Image 1 (cartoon, rainbow, N blue to C red):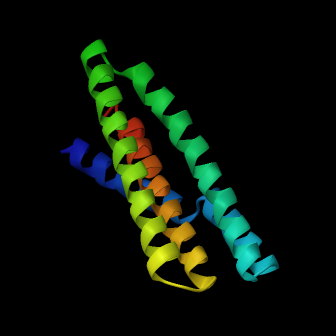
Image 2: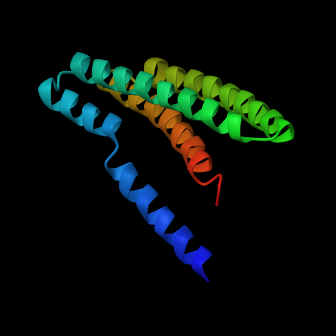
Length: 133
């Protein structure tokens, strides 16, 4: 009985910590300082780089906890995710830079890319944090 309660508590804590994420807070601060299109693009690019660093840090942490077989699965999954990311980035570029016109779409495209990297970073973080449960 204690395990389900512990898992629910862990999930609640993770959800709460996601809402309080420093990268997102830094992005909001940055955007509030300069809401020009160029400023927004710079803020989003900086946040994407931060999420990429977080993703890599968590990937290393998780890989150190896994068995050899588990590590091989993680490597394969990450390679497949990177192919997906690269393909999705190409689609985003094609759609927002060639089909849509206007500087606002550069901000939208950047944010879509940011969300892809952020989602993967949070997914790996979730695996890493729940590893022992």
